[in-house]
Length: 216
Image (cartoon, rainbow, N blue to C red; front, top):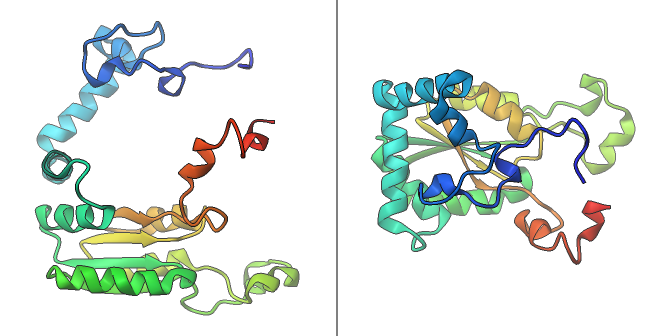
């Protein structure tokens, strides 16, 4: 059921005609709107201009397309990151990790170093700031006495002048703050989901069955 003020967009489309330009666009299609001009057309033109004339944007877009084309359904995520990082000329990689996934982060660092990258990491509890210091109730300490500190993680990696930062298991919201304060481009290797073994897509696949509670 859609609310009366529901505004249709790409997430309401099942055709994805924009992927191959060989289908019929729905009435609310953003691609069709862009082709017709108006504000959507202006936004599309602005984006295309950045791909064409901003050196970094062009390099990142082209490199990611090359990785996809050359290793489609063949490379794992970490292999794709290694290839992508090399293509954009990254030499020093930053890892922003949850302390709960420090073992995984150490393994990732070992792999990145094996591929010739310099690696520097910052864990989420860096600084050991008590939760009470930011006004949280002492009860919050039941799951650990110190706050996650994504702003400091980002500032440390900024100080180390990393070329590409890789997130490993930062909590929802903490990852948002890290993205906000990181000077370098970011990508994510592991998305935290404690319940589903860090595979949040599983809840989407089971939304009509085991996780139907999400739609109630």
